[in-house]
Every structure is written in structure tokens, then in C-alpha cells.
Length: 211
Image (cartoon, rainbow, N blue to C red; front, top):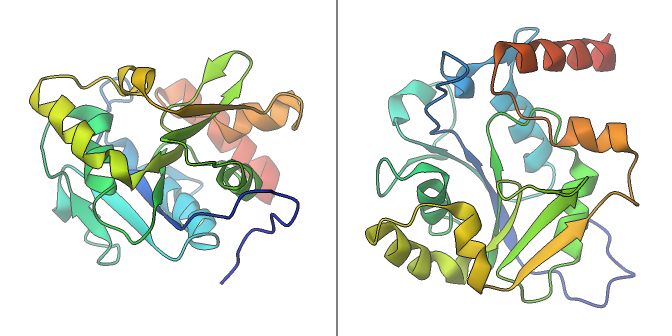
């Protein structure tokens, strides 16, 4: 099993697994984004392939289990339904073996291995480690400490579903990647598909990569 080489890091690499959030409403897209394809290849399969080369466990968090009948047994339904991404994160933090769970959404087809590895390597007892690029924070791409699960559950019970708000009172490491990677590389890495236009651009990039 591949493990990232962080021999220059002063931190001991914490244990971690990964989860792909697949329970969104897809209102702007029109159909279920979790099932969309690029040139006939499912986006969630692209993500799973990338993450499986890094983590020993990769889970799919869904609002409806049956729609993923074609996947392995690593499909888990939301413990608390209809709570948005934070509800998916709550579920994810309780299902794997590790100190942290790497979270990403099902609509990020080009998330690269090296960025995930870099984020993993800078964790220093943080509650969250998320990337930042061009002044934008990506709260649905990053590492969440499993110890935060109980507090997230309490927030959901109190009607607090905002992922960004959760980070306000916690140890959040924002990892600015602008000086580490080219701008175009980061644009593709964090590209998420919300509309038909987004999908068309992703399709073009996919064909350019594999043509």
C-alpha cells in the first residue's frame, strides 16, 4: 500500500482514512451528481481510485444506499438525514479506523494525489486541515479530526448545519497552496461540477488528459 513520504516533516503522520460525500441535492445540476460520468467513466470511480492509492479505507457517504448498488460494501447512509455536508462529515467521522478522515465531495474529479498527501503531512494536532487558493477556502476538501464528531452531532441537533461555522472555534490549519502549485493546476484540482457548463469544462479537461 502506497504511503506518502514526509521524511522532511517534523510531525508524525497521523492515521487516516477517506470519505466521499455523495448525498447532495444537485439542484443546480438537474440530475444526481454522484452518478455523473466523464467520457463514460464515473467521477466517483476516478476519486475512489485516487484515494484508494493513498488510504487503506475509502467510504462513500450517501443519503440513499440503493443508488450505489454497483459499489463495494463501503457505502454508508447518513446517520442523521437531511443535514447537508456537515451531516455527511458527522457520519464519516464515525465509520473508519484512524485519527482523521479525509473528506471530499463527489463532484471533484481531478483532485490529485499530491495535494492530498501535502495536506496530510502538515497536520499538527489540528481539528481541520483544508486548502486555500486564490483567497478561497475549500472546506469540503480536507482532513477532519474524528474527535470532533461528538461536537458536530450536538451542532446538528441544535440546527447548526454550516460547515464553515464549525471551524470558527476550532484549530483550523489553512494551507495556502498558491506558491506551491501553478494556478491552472489548482483550478483543476478544486474544480467542482455544479452545472452543465462545469461538466462540459471537466469533460474537455478529461479528454485532454487521457487522449
